[in-house]
Length: 305
DNA sequence: CGGCTTTGACCCGCGC
DNA sequence: GCGCGGGTCAAAGCCG
Image 1 (spheres, chains in turn brown, blue, orange):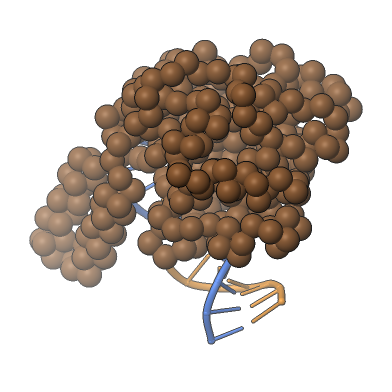
Image 2 (cartoon, chains in turn brown, blue, green):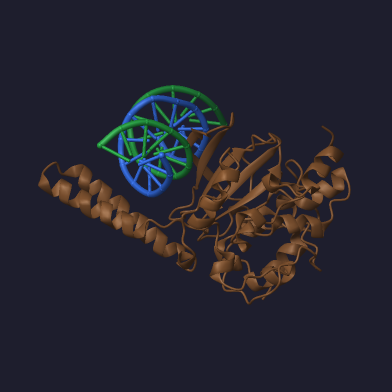
């Protein structure tokens, strides 16, 4: 299949090819209401994954730049249980990108809370490991009930990226902690955790069985640290790094990938509550891309107050 | 030797 | 209650 054909494929209104940009929750939450526009006055073509996940971003700037904002946590929350169920049919065959069980109301919970929560769960686990008497059962029960109470996931956001590389670099360091076969898909799903201490961000990487050229990267959580790559500076080092997937590079290498069009793909699909009306993509992201020269400019733009 | 991947086992939630 | 599937753990092995 040629590139052009690929493009056409993704330009169709195809529910299978939605692009759920899972920008850090805080990027979009608590933003004033505004219509979601796929036509942004800003050229987002040079947005890298790094930018997306660098929590040092000024999110207002970001949302402004993208002309994207969300009216409420309801709107911006990821696919919740209901929508998950609603989508079950459509997504059943490995199409599911969002399986967040996070209720809308949890969107504003901080990652720190999540961290504390996870820590407590872990410590409880360890406790229960150590004792083999009645206390064990007790603590287990406590553990269970606490888990039930707090079993809330971070919102997730997914990228669809055309790439032959499964694990796309985004500037952060990740440690793989698991891999599972995906039902109805020949491609496994890999689980990664941010290697930074106390950072609980996770991501899942899987290849679309519908189109093996598409890599689905689902992020969960919010980095509580700077992107290691960003810290290196945003000039030559960054530029030459192959780690930054940039939409614009695709335009440069494969033709007219309109920035607006591109960004329309990067909108969080969690802007929709109904998966069936998700922001479907005419995704045109290409392979593994190098940062364009404008990267620094953009980074400045995104970090300015 | 530290950091990372691999991989089977395990846990948990959910649907039937 | 049981089975299934997603998600995580953790031991073992690999690699620079």
